[in-house]
Length: 234
Image (cartoon, rainbow, N blue to C red):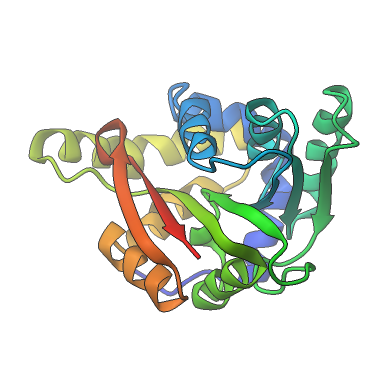
């Protein structure tokens, strides 16, 4: 399956595709991506005037969904790709949410926040790209308050025989070609299926979350197992 792609190479790849990132997410997921993010955001269950953290926030889609779902919440987003953050900040500005959403350039492995700061921390389609996942999960645990929630939304591979076979054909053969055509990047959308194949199973990610100190970890499939959502408690 090959060696993992180094973090700096991944960062440069996301910088290159940033202008087409949102469009391609919608196209390649057949419009399902926003529904997946909304499901993850609903799991945050923030208290009144709660604080949420969107790690690997990209163009701020999850941060904006959080602000919409929890109108009194304050949200911070971090990402290691400045080009993504510039686009996200413009979306925040257009939504009139600059007073509630703060975006910062930072690594998921070294979060620029004090411990016990947030009521919920989310990563949507990003934990797969964190070079040291165990360290990243430990950081999420550190910045959450006692009783806080971690929510991870990530791609997987459907297990059903017929659907799984059809999806693998799309995911490994068709999707990379469409992504290459519309993004202009030669490898970004080949990296996506390759990184999903390298990523731990839902059970394996559950084990990593528990190892990082999270309790009551659960997961469930969305859209037939194309995506899984994990929820854990500090």
